[in-house]
Image 1: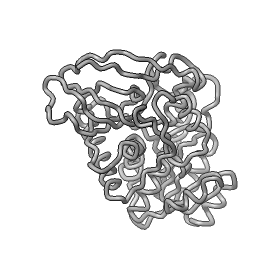
Image 2: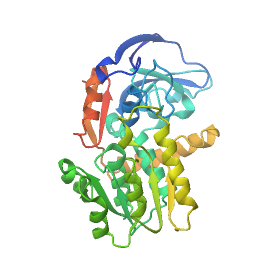
Image 3: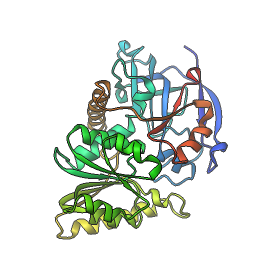
Length: 344
């Protein structure tokens, strides 16, 4: 089988219009590998930072972005179950998803339930795994508790809100006024992030919240920690407030980690964590098993209609620049999804 893949290449630090559309021939899949025809891949904050050269551990330029994907298995290599051919699957890739075809380790593929569309499933891959692990594995949130979700209109935020509400957890969600009704429709109590967030949250939860999910970082992380109830957990998973800062891209993360370490050393009975999706990858079989378990749980909720996919926009692969601009505009609810050009 001869396959020519269309790929979106990030050549260097560029504006979205500097992304390149290229083509290359894919070899037959090797042992333990599979070729997937990509139907959908997401545009996340990671890619936005990668184009600026500011993602914490991105590879050297040039490379193909794309943190996750959903598609159909076209071919498998030696040692791979041939019944996988024709199945719709999802994969967490970190890079390489912005392509019409991808060769991946078959062991990293997770089955997508029948009836769950590719673009809908795509919104739950990196976002769903991140939200599930932060909510249940780290914060260990449970029914009746109250949590604060910053950026509740975003890809991870909207998934967090839905997962929490499905579990009977009260959610306070921040966003701009533009997205207030969308956040309320997800089941959260809306708070204007441009106002005095601390005052608004304390009025709703005078004794503090049980968990805060903060992707913003920067000076505001101090307030997020201060809003916790005794025994509460801060889960930090980004430094969006520093996205346009010049200088070493690792410094904001390292400063944040240092601050969290100091807080955890204090006798304040509150916890602070930095979420790293790739933690534990050195034990690859165990890492993949955990990813597959958590994503399967999220997919099951989506297939049963408990979770609603928040597709902010569907953009053809070849128009990745437009998709990036849209994702960076902060005007959409949910996730911008690149789809196979044949679907456009």
